[in-house]
Length: 377
Image (cartoon, rainbow, N blue to C red; front, side):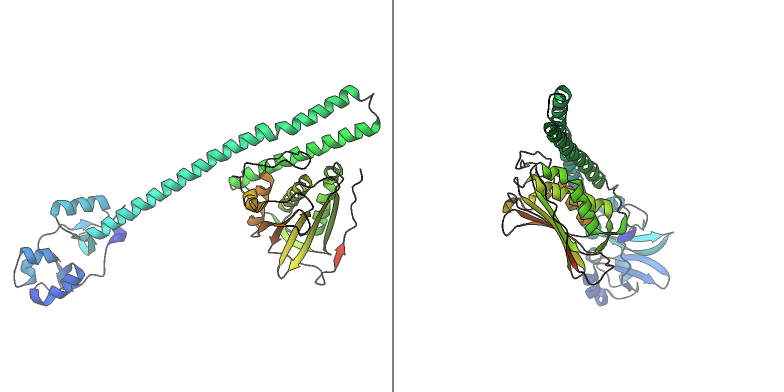
């Protein structure tokens, strides 16, 4: 910490042959006056100088004060002030006087610096604590939430391997569908872990392109039909025709996949999950609606945070890490959008998020209801 940026250069100069009485008022106001005659620097006059040397002329009252170099540290100058028992010292550059430094201002700077340093240390400590908690959480997810679905897949595959010739084709199809659904959920969890860890390390880069959001919605619904089939859940989508958005397509797919899987997980058998997009001013609002068990008011914010470790089982005892909604929040906010959950007026929840940037090819926005995708048992 050098004194260079703490030098006061708006000093008042007085002639060495002024009378002391004429400058007392300015001296008390300024706490120090520079004594100088044309190009000749004589020193610095302080109230203590007048008390110590009661003379008529300013020149007779000036005490010798060391000219400190502008590149000296705050610590060195404060030490010099303590040795000299002064509250102000002149500062020089290449032997020429350039300004003043005051003890009080140097101490204030040191105090603020220490406070700032303490704040930085506290923030870094909290960051390290959060990083360790995150690491422990990731290990927990990997050890528990990845192990469980693999056990299910292994169990079903063992049943098929040992009984394939004895099972009817319908029974085999049920087991294969359940294995497929578990494999997709496990793959989605791995994707969430990877995406979230990349986002935490700031290695995720947005790749904005123009694309039809309706086509993406329908693509995700087609992908998740088998997961809904197990619980005989109906999937539907509604959106304006030719609705294009400017966003990262991969991130939009991750968001929609997580929200729809979440809706399926917490919806009972024979329930309904709907996805629809609406246009408000310059924003698109996308909603994933379900007829499930809903979200308690006290958890409506917690479910989007990594600190929410108490994850509910699904209506068919499906397990999960709770990481999907955290990833959704990160991805939506990286697009400068918002995500939240509301109660469905009938039953269940409405998970909504906005995209503030979009481009429309068709300004008429004719709504088009997609055919109902009925999931039969």
